[in-house]
Image (cartoon, rainbow, N blue to C red; front, side, top):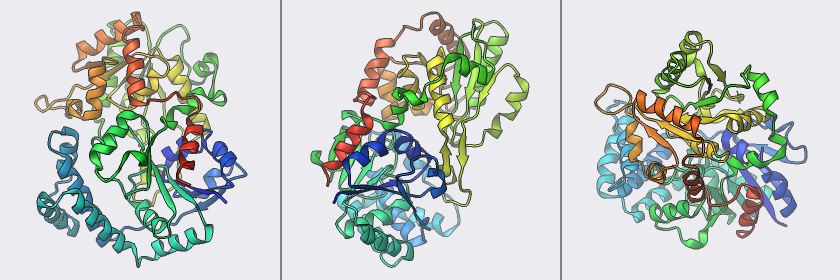
Length: 463
């Protein structure tokens, strides 16, 4: 009997693997599919009545668990920082002057991992972290659950959340195959270590496979399969389609004016979004941009309260606040407990399809819009001398350098460049179209059609 356990860690995993065709495809190929959810089981009530959901107890990371995890992450970042600005930037972000136990421990670990950061040392830190789970009650509950269920494969929809580590450990102890999907385009080239070592890895493309082999020396070719990116699959699923008339009516949009969509990042990395929105809105008001409607979609990872002043200042801006539900507040990563609705997927697809162009600060939304062959502008005004949040430093990140070098977007560093790029793309949306398609082939590597089926077929190879 082939039995698949699918570990849903957060709202994005819910979107990628529950709101796509993945579950129905998996149910056709496995004798049983069970969702192991770090989200409340109640959110699945109206999704698929035939799927069984087990709500997992949240793992509370104690100091010893954290210490060895931190050692592993700092060693990984230190080892891979030479010649990699993104990883160096993230390594420096871990530095702290805090006078707490974790602050003192972090400074100690920086000194230790400065010298002991080889792949063998990273594996040693992983073993110590696994040892720290062995007597934990939640970890022991995971072992009991896995033995009772008898899974042949455990599929993790995200490789980084620290709270999945004891589940991976217990699965591997009892010889259950563990496979993880690499969550995002920047996770390998600029982020810290994965939560654990897995038996198999599903990646977007050959480019991501190359990154995985580069940054994880103990992983080999046979452990990796390229499957594409399920987060984009709803764009080719008929159930998420909407007419332009219905879309414009829902947001009170003028159907005769082109729509300029600005998509926000979250406050942690996209601190200049208010400036970009204000710049575009004022340019439209002053006639510096051809008559158009500015539509702003905020980040689903945060409360849009920081835009309240702009909402009042510019009544002509149309706002789309993502319809994601906050399912839990008492969680170590509260943002991960925001879950998208079907209505939001429909809205997002309509925004992508009916907008004339997109502006964002170097986010994956660039790729979303490119699937609908829409021009994209990346605004980065801040540097280390002009007093703005330095978002130009992200241009040195490896995954962003692929974007910049592709010529698929217009990267703008000041107001005049932004306005010029908007007017150019509104008049000539066909510009850079081939570059956009080449970037999609590089980053994603597979067609959107059949993504869920490819993932299931790949998982079956580890049965």
